[in-house]
Length: 231
Image 1: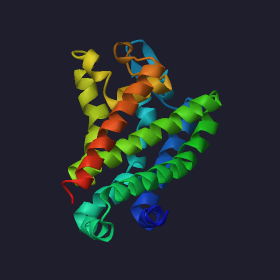
Image 2 (image 1 turned 90 degrees about the vertical axis):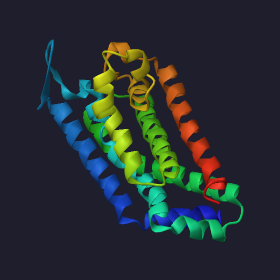
Image 3 (image 1 turned 30 degrees about the vertical axis):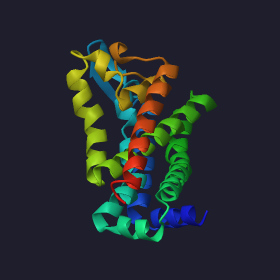
């Protein structure tokens, strides 16, 4: 528990983490208000539609939110703090487990205030919908944290995870829908019941399995590298 508390302290004292939560909260709230009032509509082939039909846009704040854990995880490599941690804790598996526990707790503790206000503003959702949204924030946050260990960077995970849904998926969706639908963002949208396109739609159950698969892959690879490469 002492190691987990130490990791939590490191994250809690970073202004960037608090800034990421604040921006995600504001962005979610603004989008919820616009969706609730129908103040903004998106032009489409079948006429205009409310912005809450555009799943990628409504989920976009999560890619700011994940900086809550990506910044402290990747920042350890930029500042060289990881060497201090590895020296202080000879048991690398114990260190990896403590970091994972701290990151998970931080995501859960900050995702709730980041999404609940906007969820209540939009109305129409159930408790299950809210839990699924928090689950998406948790899993994408864990993917980002694992990615930060793999890349030894805080910029690369944020850039890649943002570019995939905004630029890569739209470019490949019509040509390779069978590939695009297995990407983390599309799996998350399917889990939430807001797929971008019928061609990339998965059932909620399959979406959850795919997103869990990505999460376990990134965390597993990060754990291996933390106990071997970084040692």
